[in-house]
Length: 459
Image 1 (cartoon, one colour):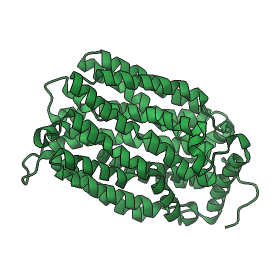
Image 2 (cartoon, one colour):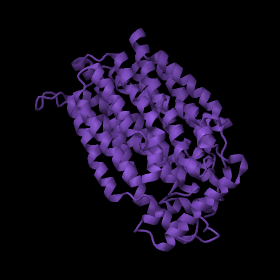
Image 3 (cartoon, one colour):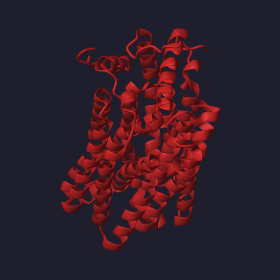
Image 4 (cartoon, helix red, strand yellow):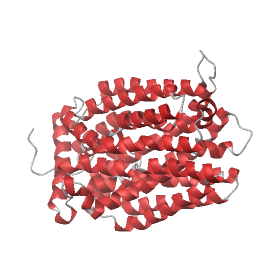
């Protein structure tokens, strides 16, 4: 396909139409995928007490098993994203969803610590590349001016998932002795099968790249591809923003900083996610269903905060400021949760959840603007794999702290300290601001094209 030498402005009618179609065709589908993904990743938090009662898996073993997922996830993340780039998002994301759904369903056989550990390792290997693949996929579809909003929509799906996961998992845990199975076995089976079903839907509806989209006109395809190519050329032409080679990425200070900051966001996320049901349970006198229901409140609040953060980030171009504000809230919330009563700690975890969700959702637009060409897929995968080790450290740390002290408060304070370090690191992050902060009238049109109901001043 030939591209015009001068790419269309973001507010051109043709590009606006292409962006709007792509957003509403693809983002809701990806959000559905991430909802199912998130539920399968964190449902063991609701099964913690049941696993201990039925399988003898104590707090330390639970924390280790919850974290082992992220070891194999990290090992296979970069190869998985390279294969996605080779075979296309449609095939590879479908493969990931079906394989992780199968392994998640097999968690119903976790009758002892060894099986629990093996299945968590297998789940990490099966799921590796999913999130990083979606982030890379967005770079192939959305111009910089609306990518923050697309990323925010993706992260808002995790909040939606948390809202669904609590009551759903609580209800499934109540199915004890149905057909001879424990409630936790029904939970893993049903939620795993759901991922396989959604995998079939993905194969039917997902489109790998704009040139394959039958719902775009030829003119729209050309306009969108030209805009994406022009932004890529702009990044590549800037010597100071060139990314390192694949083999030297870990020697690049910016890449190390990206990995460490994302590690902090994931550390906070999984410190709260895997232990939130326990915090709610400590309030006392609550059924499994009520624990699940109350556990959704922090994520319901975070859903709106994430969407607002994505809007502000795109509208102002203040990527680092939005990111840093998330870490500040996470540090405040985690510290307060560790130092207050059980009931008040749940309230403080709402603040912490808003913080780490805003931080995580605001983060990836920065490395997306830093990485160039063939380095985008493996670079994002590298950041995601190392950053997600926070998902191993958090439950392992809190599990050991709880086993030795009877409380996770000390672990929460450590995590809060890491968030403070990440807050300081935000100032050192570099990106090409010109690609992110378009003139207000261009940005307003871009947001409107993506379906935003607001009309910006000057648009």
